[in-house]
Amino acid sequence: MSVSGKKILIAVSGGIAAYKIHFLIRDFVKKGADVQVIMTPDAENFVTKLSLSTLSKKPVYIDFYNENGTWNSHVELALWADLIIVAPCTANTLAKITHGMCDNLVIATYMSAKCPVFIAPAMDLDMYQHPSTRQNLEMAEDFGHFIIPAENGELASGLIGQGRMAEPETIIKRVEEFFDQEIQNKTLAGKTVLITAGPTYEAIDPVRFIGNHSSGKMGFSLAEEAVKRGAKVILVSGPTSQTAEDKNIDVHKVTSAKEMLEKVFQFYDNVDIAIASAAVADYAPKEVAKEKIKKNDESLIIELVKNPDILKTMGEKKTHQFLVGFALETQNEEENAKGKLEKKNLDMIVLNSLRDEGAGFKNDTNKIKIFTKTEKKEFALKAKDEVAKDIFNFVESQLLK
Ligand code: PMT
Image 1 (tube, rainbow, N blue to C red):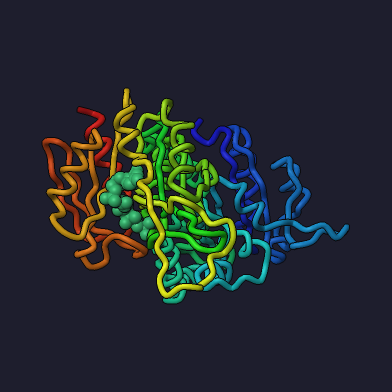
Image 2: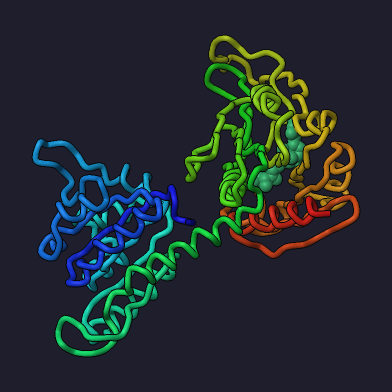
């Protein structure tokens, strides 16, 4: 039930257990999954492309190129998949996975993937217990992959012990449990989340601008976390080199505060949660010079005018939205953050202080305090991905009230 409609990429490597893949494909297809098979060249010694493609109802790919010279794009295959299963995974393929030895289509596809990866090892018992295999399995787990341990029984060598690839039913059960858990984790399903990220650039002339050090990392981490929780995510970002890993994030690139304001209000009415993590320039040059300003004088005065306060406008126009602001402070941090919470009519504010090492701009880490009108919670220095989780956990706890 839970694999229905899921895109499952099965990567077969060269072991005797490859014969079981026929049953694995057949049962996934029966349950409504969309199955694509790729193989290592050695796998073809154990199973044929024809049998696997008949069951998966799709061509099976082994090489980077077809006979007619067309490219089998490992990148497209990887990005297509909701989940990859390497089964059987031989000791050799496992070692290539953990060491990035990218000499075949299976490994190139695996290395291009952003989706969860399941590994079902199969090998003889001594190979399975060898320190290098144990270490590689641990490394694969550290990469965040899911290992479906080999089972005990009679092996191709005639020896009896652990090394048999898990049965197709076991693999399918693990995958189903994974997708079921994913559904349970979709705590923001049905919600639309709008996030602002990055800096804004305010043009002085055709080559210069006023900007700031925001990298966009905090905002992009928030967007990734929201989409993982099942939300529809709109990300309005100023100029940054960040790219959204999840293709479901609807990214809108803007440059100036005025453009950000306009883009935000294109969506604002229909969002449930809005989080303003962008570092918006408070002022912009009154006039933008049409030509590059020449350095004729000893000093240059540029008149600046106030930019629109996007978050304050969001607060004024708030109807049903849960509105979260950020406060980047260097002094009187708590007082200033609470002031912004009040003045901008926010439901919650996330304070980060440049006085805390590793917090704020550019870093991969941040250290935050969250305030609502009645609550305060302090968090340790963490990776921005983890900070994003803390923020959404807090938002969700407020929505439940
Ligand atoms: O991008 P990174 O390198 O990962 O860094 C993350 C960050 C430090 C930029 C982020 O964590 C952060 O603190 N963002 C808010 C920065 C900021 O502009 O703070 P502020 O205290 O000046 O503004 C308060 C709030 O009003 C912010 O939510 C801001 O988005 C918003 N604002 C400010 C001015 C303005 N004209 N319009 C706004 O919407």
